[in-house]
Image (cartoon, rainbow, N blue to C red):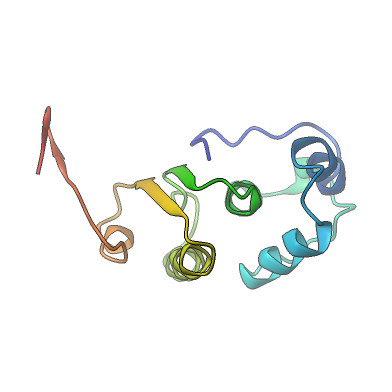
Length: 126
């Protein structure tokens, strides 16, 4: 999932059909609801906040079915409560589907929810 939240213009449904046509819409909508995403699929993406766009892209990233998922600052546009909820859902998804997630964050609290944490200090991994 990229840090820059690029979606095509149009509705949520149009984005889902173009970006991930092989994922059942019901699975996407179910996971979005778990992340407190309250819009219907006819909502234009231009009406979504940064946090809502971030959650939509996160769900698409998780449901692609790849064994390794790369997430760059997946909670940066979310408040504290949504950040914790998001991390919980990421962990549940990983446990259920046996994925590996490589997550980059500057948020110490989010990092503390990971199984393993590596810190960068200049060019050194701690």
